[in-house]
Length: 207
Image (spheres, rainbow, N blue to C red):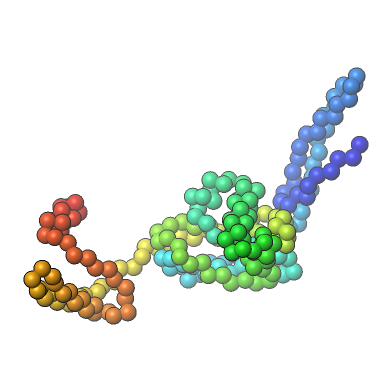
């Protein structure tokens, strides 16, 4: 009797119980242990943490091996619970990206995997939010070859800007002309026109 099993992509051994049964004979339970693979390990360094971005440096233990990197909110990361669930979630995201770009899964994966030291900037993040930066060994076909290595990072609050405006209003019959001049012309801003009643309501809601 020959029994085969999938590769153990974890560095830890795994065990299971096999029950062998045959008609007219007593069943036999066997404990089977499968060694863990050596797998890739990673050193993750996080720097330049801003309210919407950070930079990740990945140093793999073997520069000839391929790996995949990503970031996700810590709340989602902890909901997924296991390396297999986290990895499958990321591969599903790669498949969706491939469909949106009219590429095959392997083509998209090729553009998202690396070898050797890698620096990666993650942008468009939410301020005051906990994130997880992760790295995992992977084959060109999308098979996991290591445990998931990860590190936590929290983005700070978005900084406020001390900014003054000059507002000129000229009225003509039922129309008005509004000219807004910001003190810092390179900073983005929004504007609106409210009635006195609307302003009083907003101020009341803010206490």
